[in-house]
Image: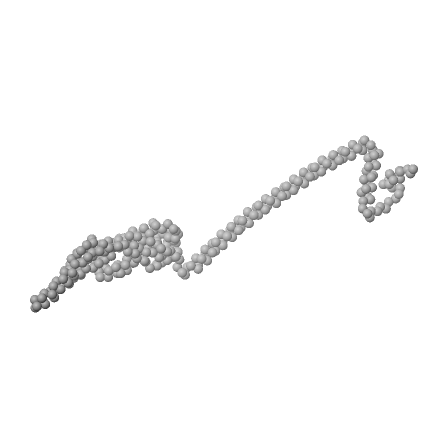
Amino acid sequence: MRKSALFLPVLAVVVITALSSVFIVDEREKVLVLQFSKIIAVKENPGIGFKIPLIQEVVRYDDRILSRDIDPLEVTPLDDRRLVIDAFARYRISNVTRFREAVGEGGIPAAESRLDSILRSATREVLGSVSSNDILSTDRAALMLRIRNVAINDANALGIEVVDVRLKRTDLPTQNLDATFARMRAEREREAADEIARGNEAAQRVRAQADRTQVEIVSDAKRQAEITRGEADAKSNAIFNKSFGADQEFFEFYRSLNAYRKALRGDNSSIVMSPDSEFFSYFNSVTPE
């Protein structure tokens, strides 16, 4: 009984010690084995590892690509037009030993804090060397690549590989929005006024051309009418002359009848004239039967 009573606790201690000396490395992580805060072993491949219980400890780090949002920051491009940049980066721990030596027990939170400073500095450096139009354009791939390349060297000192940097939003500072909108509104109003002026000028040219064309058409029509009227009058006079030459007495009689018709037209027509007037010569020449 005494032996079995002693054996069970010893067996339990042996089992616990054996279990505590074994650890499993997941494929999504890297593992450091530390002894008194010094790195003893690095496990980057998935599988089973061993350590000395109570003396050595296991520290695990994520081996996947991680994302980090950068707090919005103001940059001043070459044209002194301040912009607020909102960006994010993707990174991974490339050298776990260097990472541990750089950040110590702070781990990923400490590394991300230092990475933020690196990315903010690189963003200001690159975007400060170009104009605001380049930053606001849709084709910013070259700028994002430059920011990544600038940040890579400093991040390597932390054992971190910067995989990518992306600009999510680019805005004007709040205090500059009203002034910018007012300037944009003034520019649009000026452009609208220029368009209206050009339109009025074009309309005036069209109107003047139409008026000139109208005058030319009316003048030509009047000229043609005068020519036609002149030709008709000439033909009429020729007919009258020919008729007068054929029978002078009849022609005079015909003209007198036309004169009577015109003079006595209307219901209230009246003429005060001497009966001996030549106007009534044909009336007086009628011989009663």
